[in-house]
Image (cartoon, rainbow, N blue to C red; front, top):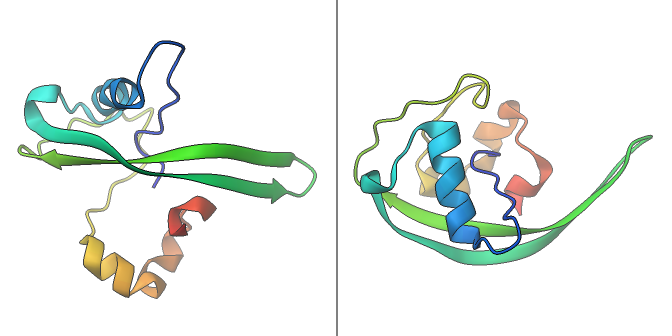
Length: 106
């Protein structure tokens, strides 16, 4: 749920930042995909007791992988799960044990 969390630097587009993180985190190069685009944005705010608040605007991007070969960086990725979107959307209770981050459900 937190894969390819990108924070564009000044002058960098969201797509460029995502392209960079795809390669850094998952070893996915641009020749493995097409149709990288922003599909949505939402504001997320979560209070953490004794720690403060996380408040940001999150972009949702879509990419179509033509080649699903991955080479994840072990320092970035703690585990992976391929889930069919429709199944995940229709049966979120089956994924509760994964402790997905709070904004994933948004």
